[in-house]
Length: 266
Image (cartoon, rainbow, N blue to C red; front, side, top):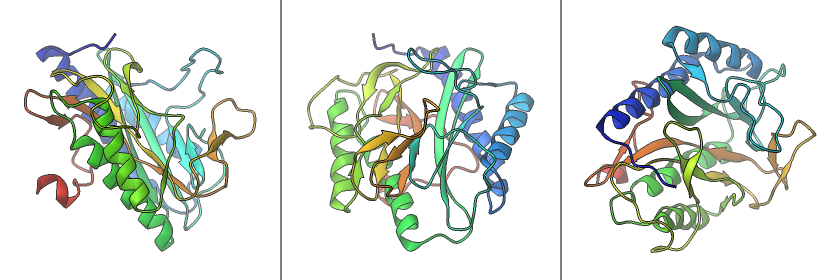
């Protein structure tokens, strides 16, 4: 069942979303060559403690999965999603997605950003930048009366027109007093299809875009890490979005959030 949030719920979601984004702000200056993803995870845990938030991922265990062992996900280079922090130092040229979900007063805020570690290749920079734009092409479609298929179609059309592919196995999701609620928000699809958007709905838009083919596979046996099958680079950005009476509001914005692409305000 898809939930809609009342004024109090929207306020709770705004607070949780901002705090999740502020964890990423806090981590930003630390993400440079030599730091390990485990150290990033520890910094995030300390930041959440100071905020009075808790990590939604630590100990998270959907059916068929082992409990997730960290306070956030760190997906490096060809890791598509759910990368578990470890002791391998990041090196110059790496790209890493850091995905944070916090819980504040029972409400969940979920967001992720790409980080460039030192100087990265033009191809890696282009992938990260166009994935960010793809997410915003999806966000820009949000308004009452639009359909979830409109969001997926906008993302897919933009990504594929730039020579990239869209991962099919993972999608955005409703969010509120639960980490994952209905609806599923696909990042591909047909316009005019799937559920109609209504004011008060909150969900994530979080496209995973591959430089190569769209196919993915599980990596190793940790039960979580997903990589591109062809070992090509993958990028992801994520915002939590509210359907307003007239359009959309991004709930996971903070002082350090990158600005929307120019076409959003045009």
